[in-house]
Amino acid sequence: MTATLTAPRPGLVPAPFRSAVRSSALPNRLDSLTSLRFFAAFAVFAHHFTGLGNKTGYGTAPAIFPYSMIGGHGVTFFFVLSGFLLTWVFKPQEHPVAFYWRRMARIWPASLAAAVLGFYAYYVAAHEHVDWPSVIASLFLVQTWFPGVTPTLPGNEVTWTLSVELLFYALFPLAARIAVRHRTRTLALATAAGLVGMWAVNWWAAATFEPSFEGWIMRNPLVYLPQFLLGMTVALAVRRGWRLPMRPFVPVVLLALYVWGYYTGRANLPAPVVAQLDYTIRPVIAVLSMLIILAFVQREVNGHRGVLNKPSLILLGAWSYGFYLIHHSISRLATYAWGRAGDDNSVLLDMIGCAVVVIALSWALFRYVEEPAAQWLNRRMPQRLRRRVGGPAPDVPPTVAAEGARAGSAPVR
Image (cartoon, rainbow, N blue to C red; front, side, top):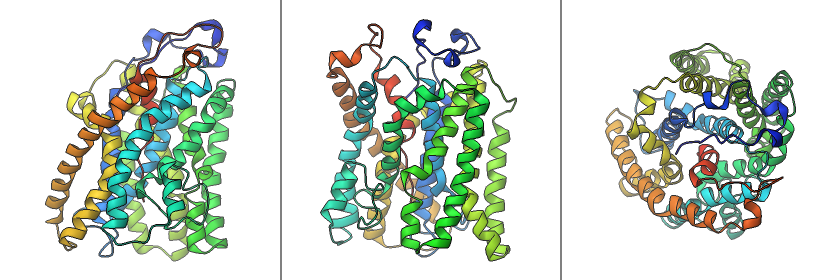
């Protein structure tokens, strides 16, 4: 889907939020970001499908392994993108409850529908014990908020990142109103401090707790707030006229070099250095993700269109939320049905075939659940919530309100 930037009445907008660039100079659509969501979701899919060597997944393809494991951090891209897009379309006049209504109208119906398949894949077909309180927590997307859920990723496993998103959504109306009143430099310093804090928390948790509790800490929504703040900060900076001259291929190459260096280092460096690589991977991937987002946004702001603006990729991006919700269930069921395929490059053909099935199902989930449910629920929003602070507001198309919600809705293990 695409984001539409609606220019609010100047008198209602805090001065720091007003763009140094005329509103007409900003694009109404950010199609390249929609397309990028599919690539991030596919990276997560590749991580799950090829697994962790010969221990998990359908099969390991030497052509892309171990680099495919970095796809597990594709969720970082979605967290950063969520902060960026929600801030890009932020309306200071919108009632906070209206914001919450639109977010949940977009993410919850599809999540509930995918939970049926997830329950079958992770419990029925796997012959696993059902801890109902944990499953119910996952249905309400709060499973990462509390320790002790069983298993560590209950319900539809991939929805743990929606649980992370939920805290950000809860805080966003207040956080955005605070952010727009601060200078970009102040926000940048706060963001940098938060990303350093992610590294420090990871180091502290690994040194202090057993792996199971450390894992819960590193899935806790509070730990990921700096990644959302990074997206918010850069969105405000771009709206205020800040630019970083950079073509999209530069951060893409930087990401590729980092992935190569990360796994090369893990194989050759001393254990203490490898540990630091692991502790820093989340903030580093966040920065690289933001550079990719920034490069493509600046390209669209300048009126350029490229391959990511192709309708086919935009559609794949629109279906990426459904793709994310069901991909792991499908690959898990394939593993149950046929066993692990082995560890050779023929697994790539299996992965492509599985991806085609998941894309078809994600289209159906978008076409028959996600989009109609969001429109139906948004039409039933109470009229009092539609009014802007200080006066009535025109209705906002569902695609506008949905953009940020779906942008950050893709997870990983």
